Length: 396
Image (cartoon, rainbow, N blue to C red; front, side, top):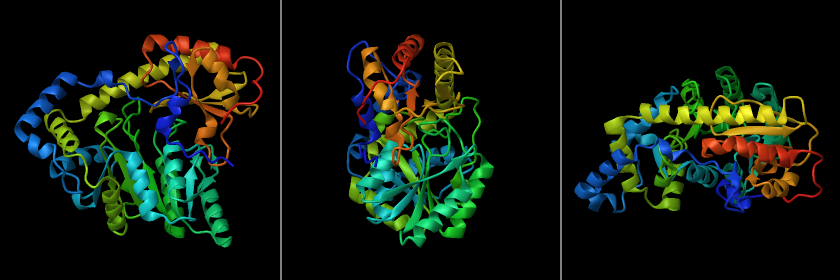
């Protein structure tokens, strides 16, 4: 059984082995988009006028000044939460840990959309929860399979109350669940009394500027929403939030306070100041344009180097950071990691996104942070590493 509990932040370190290496492994944002001069001035003013407060402990709540910035982001996907229902986090990874510890109990089962973000599965396993993947169809997670799976698990005496989804521009596949499919899944959640965990780092990063209605907008009492500023601003500030229904708010608030004591007053103030002066639209549009260009360069290079009828298949995503390849013959892609390193390129094998090894034939390529001029060269190196029969062995 696949039992890797390493968080996703460790994955790039598994593959980066040399100065000439082109890394398609780590999911880093393109911070060239950030208006650093404007942010520098805002931070300088913030420290000069309010440094004693910004550098001090604060209360375990989302700062009043930051609430409009969060509401602005959530409203773009039709969602909303009252200030009292917002729990501050140091990003969605902390939110996942708070959910796992605050809402689950050791030995309970979490239903998971797969391939799954490794940080989520690591958080759930660290909290002692069991994972069970839900089968999908051409439209994503299958509501009928979700229902059958939950009923079967409960008939076996297992407790299954939580469903985890990364529904929009998903890591690692880049796919997005349709609104109709979201409604169907929520209907099963209501029927079986499941609480849905909506992990949404990439929701506003569709290349065409479109958005998809959030699960939280469709049923706010049934959904715990995890938001983060890491992908639409910058990860270095380590700031995010949970939008929690009333019935789970106390547990999540207590758990988040135990984990972090208090959020960063400096980070929250910096984000609020940026939003007040500039809003989010220009920055998000800049990120979308950067990722749209990089994704196009990678997808075009993959078509040139690997073709469309060989052993590798993939879809050109409409948003997010990643392209997901699969081997038609079901070969474990971890076997290619060493060969890729020898060719000076890295990727993340599909086993890292598995619950029980079911996606070992996939591999994730990240385009978001790779210099534009190196993308085609990196894909050429990857194609050379993937050519021919799969090497024997491989370390997962």
